[in-house]
Length: 103
Image 1 (cartoon, helix red, strand yellow):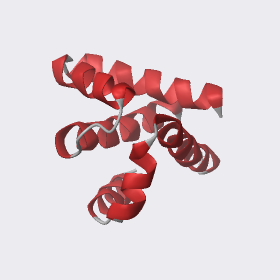
Image 2: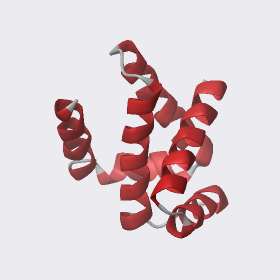
Image 3: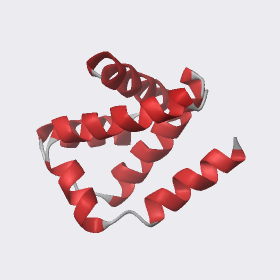
Image 4: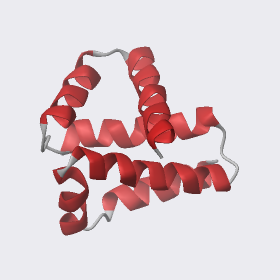
């Protein structure tokens, strides 16, 4: 699993700015992108808990390093910032389930 963490960290560090802007510009695009990545994780055999941990890592990065591009992202960022570690983890689970449901 450490290998997955390294891949996530590397992907976040080297994410193309233009592609990132495209994904974050529209909340539906963001959800579709996240769903695509979740499907890849599921095919790799990652558990829901592991997927939630990765979602938590990405959400933490976005909350800390990116300005929200729409109302939905702004709400998520505010919820993330006021939540404690346990609440953030639960929010990651909820995000995961939301994109799985819509995918």
